[in-house]
Length: 137
Figure (cartoon, rainbow, N blue to C red):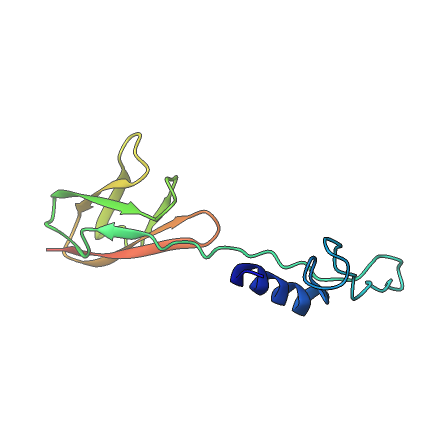
């Protein structure tokens, strides 16, 4: 038996209690080892595990954003495997304003309004997000 086949049989033996072609009748499927019991309501019991990927962080560049009062700079924000749209919030909109570039989900314009520091937070989908500091000089 080849090493990959032996490994597959070992897994089948551990999980299912048998290995097709590795013992018993050649080519026969392994016998089941457990039968779900009925719950009092008549539905079968069991657990289904569905892996859910963790959202990628949003990364902005430049970071931090340095801008002068009454000046505008461009900022690009993106998350691996996601193309938009994003939502954004400026923590203190009296220090800086942020506008999204027309037709582009990942490019923003930051304008300095008064001296200070604030944060631009960018979100997407179900929980993905990130932030960048904005320093207005």
